[in-house]
Length: 168
Image (tube, rainbow, N blue to C red; front, side):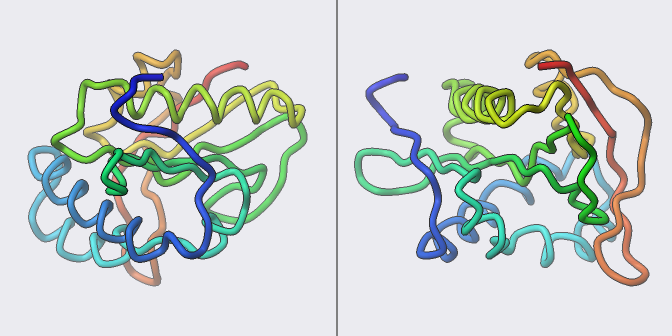
């Protein structure tokens, strides 16, 4: 791991900082892949830190030496859309890297940690709901597109994405 950040397990106390990171990332990184109306409807929900993920022990943050969060992401055995657990399958959740830190290995380092933890948990397959702009990132990590999806965000709001998967 580079000397300019460290990865640690997130805690509920990270909620505000994770929310700030998501708010700094998603509007910038998604603007070329989504219509403004889609982002206007989805971003308020997408840029909130999820308390359950922060308390899961399987959600991680990348922290710069000055304490700023520059990346986040995790995994769970539960599907994010319906909460079901399928034996042998784990789900990559709520990844983001600050735009100023793209290309510095932050997302890969967090994903590598998630893959290792999920494998140790007993998962043989990882799935994720990728945003359209992140499809290349996940492909570079060995994920393959399964199909296009409409991810439910709240009643009446869905978000176009790609279901991606890889074996672990």
